[in-house]
Amino acid sequence: MTDQSQNSKTSPAPTRIRWVIMSWLTLVLMLTYLDRLNLSIAGKFIQDEFSFTTQTMGWVFSAFILGYSIFQIPGGWAADRFGARNLLTTAIVWWSAFTALTALAPHLVFVRWFGVVGSLIIVRFLVGAGESASAPAANKIVAYWMGSTHRATRSSFTLLGIGLSGAFTPFLISWTMQRWGWRMSFILCGLAGLLVALAFHLYVTDRPEQNSRVNAAELALIRSTQSTQTNSPEKPRPAPWGKILSSPSVWALLIGYFCQGYPIYIFHTWFFIYLVRVRGLTVSQGGIWGATPYLAIAVLAPLGGKFSDAAVRKLGKRKGRQLAVWVGMLASAAFLWFGSGATNKWLAITLLAAGGGFNMFAVASFWAACIDMTLEFTASLSGLMNTFGNLGGWVSPILTAYIATHFGWNIALDFAAIITIASAASWLFIDASQSFDTTPQ
Image 1 (tube, helix red, strand yellow):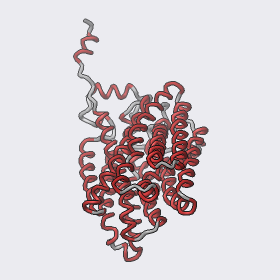
Image 2: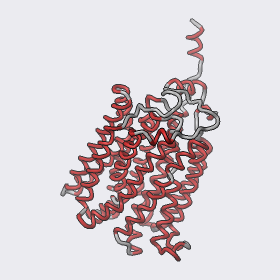
Image 3: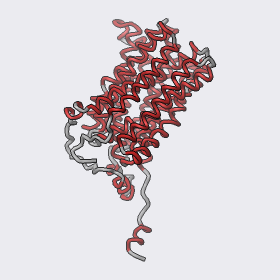
Image 4: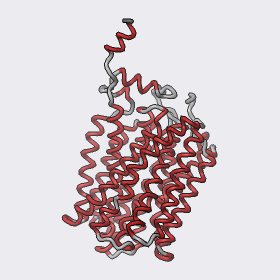
């Protein structure tokens, strides 16, 4: 027996800590959507208690998204500069505290000057500001823990968290509110976040070599599937913003993600109220059926990631990512269009849910493209992209309320389908193989 074969038998098997890290990222993203979707469920109770109009609730919904959008770029920069783990731990504590304070918003000092509406808007804006670091920081961790051949698949772990959280949040929050009122649901969400922050900080590291639980075999396995070395300098370099912002490919990515954010935020804000007020479901039915888009996301987002990576291996980064986005977005647009006009409410809900799921089928390719274009500055580019996606999300509940009020919900959803097609069209101009790093990928 040769020394090499004997060593291969006696060498320890690779640990699987990378999968545990991906599970932690899934849990953190589940928490973010628990804390943003809870208002969409509680919105009906708040609207009834304070006699808010539909358009007033649209402004309350949008406050979170505005804070989330504005702080994406600072959040991405901070993750690149100070490390994703420390930033994400701090962010979880921040947004969890303000989630709990949502319960007290009608009684905070802000009410003196801005009224109940203004107080809710301020608190939800601050929740959004705290959550802004979550997606860029998570994508930064994915970049260093996972190889280049599985970027979309691993990025879809965070999207899986969205789907799983969205699947149980409507049921959980509606059940909690019916028993203890809408205020208690926010307090419990805040407490859960503080526990997650502590556990996350104790277990997760920015890179695999920093984690004592990772053995040499797993570290070698991770490095063998990286397309470039990850030993970036000790002192982080500033992102090459001039190079990034002068790229037509990046601007197409930003516009495409703006158009992606508009339709998906209808599910995050108005869908539960749409089911109850427009489709005639009870609150309990709305809690159950409100989960259907997120069940679709939980299934289709990982499939979209796998499809995207397989397409890249077959067609290359540019054409592979393009194909995955086109399949997802065009299918999403079709389901939204036909779902909006369906007369049978159960068929309509099913079609609309599929529209939400296929939207996220495509999203894995957007996040993978941020890593494709720059490993070193992944969080900065991810934050920039997510700024535009959530600006689309900020416009969404306001414009959807306006269109639905003046022209009907069918037209509001048809308009969302058209915006979805525009997201697909943007990928005609996106080249995911373009790199902004100083070393080739």
